[in-house]
Every structure is written in C-alpha cells, then in structure tokens.
Length: 239
Image 1 (cartoon, rainbow, N blue to C red):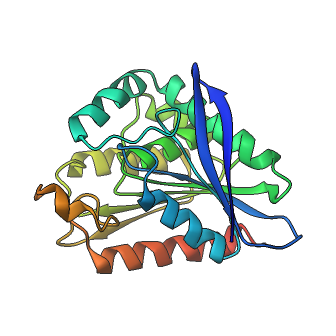
Image 2: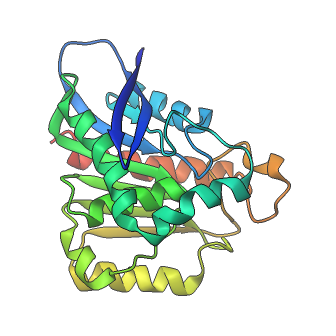
C-alpha cells in the first residue's frame, strides 16, 4: 500500500488530502472519500485504505483546510455553516479534490466516484449536483436536502446510492421524501437504503464514545451499506 499527501487550493484555503493506492502500473478507478463534519479522520483514512485494497485509487479528503480535525461537534458545525449557506463554496472544495484525483497518473479519469459520511455524503451529493463527471455517488448517513432540487438534480451524471438510518433524527422522513422526489423528477438512477433501528453515524466505531443517543455504530448497517456500495462500483467503475 502506498500513501501520499496531496495539496491543492480551493475556496481560499490549502487542502491536504491523502491518496491510497496499491502498487501496480495500471491506472485504476478513482474514488473521493469525504469525511464526517469533524474533518479528515482515521475513519475516512481507513475507508480509503479499504477501497485501495479493492483495486481503487482512493483520496481521503480534507474538508476544513490544512488537514484540520476538530473534536467538538458544535465547532465542526460552525465551520460548515458557511458552506451550507453557500453551496458553491462546498462544491468548489469538492471539485478541486476531484480535479486533483483525475489528474493523477494512477487514475483513469473517466472512471471516478465519490463517497462520503455525514457531511461528507452531503458534499458528494453537491458535487454530483454541480454536474461533475462521476460514475457514482454514495452517501452514508448523509444529509439529503438541497437549495435547488428541481434544477440541480438534472446535472447528475451517474448512479446514486444513499444509505440512511431509519431512526436517524438528523435526517427526517420528510427530507427523505423530498430527496426521493428530487431523484424521480430528474430521472436519476438512484437507490435509498434504510436500516431499521439505526441512527446517525452508523459506520463510525467512535460514534458510541460521543455519548449521544442519536449517534451509534451499527455493525450490520455498516457492512450492508459498504457491500451495496461495492456492488454499484463493480458495475460502473470496472466496465
């Protein structure tokens, strides 16, 4: 396994993301991995490493600049508030990461995808809504709402999978319904997987340590959602 820190600029900041790729001479499909609201963490790194072992070149993405990682949820949300208010800034950060990944010699630029966890899932969806050239987008316990669902959804170019805890208090049923309408009206090839008895952050083993009943790890939902992602990637990134 080879890792490399990659720097680039966007939205007035310098980002330090980490590329994971197995040794080999043949270019591979590329996958962006956007982390939870706290920033580039071991959770995102582990997922990128797992993707590399599956044959992808995976970029664990910095979202706050300079590889910043915060531990307090309130502080993290404060950093993200301006991005939710102006999704052009969020998209700019994602597009810069995608441009960097597609320019790498290890990557087949026409075969790229994006995944994300919590805010990172939102970021992946916004990247797709910008019209980015992505074969697939996957969001794990990700926010689903957008400011312009009717116009932006038409920009989607690839398949979409969102994996949501059915009891996630941060993603209300009405938000899921609005997302479904967005996808249907735009004719997107999409799936939504709901996991019963499951709340937010179900892919993160550290979630239980936050002592917040709304955030809990679920081994079953974690494994099933990761398998669903692999099924889609096998269909669209290796053909």
